[in-house]
Every structure is written in structure tokens, then in C-alpha cells.
Image (cartoon, rainbow, N blue to C red; front, side):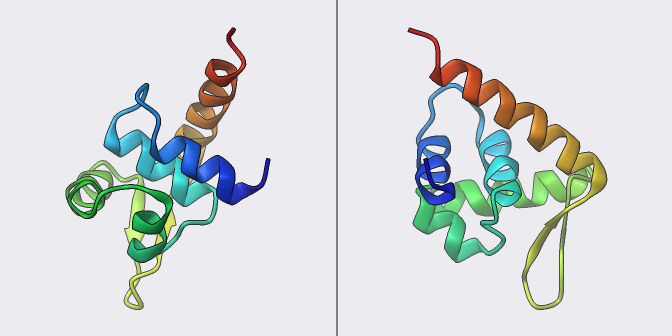
Length: 91
């Protein structure tokens, strides 16, 4: 599965909150608001959860509007992606 296909599955997952989906997608390289919405997150989901992620110390938004995960954000995103993969394999 390509990163884009995985990102789209995560964006549409009913198992995770908007915040969890946002940081997983950023970890997969969706580092701009436009990329996140193109993957399937709603604009309001991106907007509200980006502020929440920044407050929690999970992301930093650079001057050029690139979204970067902090070390803490990367660790949490990795855990969530692993959980997503396990959920996808449950039959």
C-alpha cells in the first residue's frame, strides 16, 4: 500500500479522533493543510486539531506553514500508526 493510500484510509478511519488522524497523516508526509484536506480530513478538522496539537506540544507550524511533528508527536504518531495497522488486519 502506498503512503497516499494509507493516508486516505487513516483520514477516513472511524476508530480515531481528528487529532490522532492529523498527527498520523503528518507523520506520513502530509505536512501542509492542503495535503491533509486532499487526503480526506475536513478543513474544520484540520484547523481545530492543528491548534490542539500545537498546544499539546505535538506539532510546530513553521513560517512557511509547513507542519512538523515534535519528537513527542513523532512517537505518538508511530504508536497510532502501528495501532491502525493492527486494526486493519483484524478480520
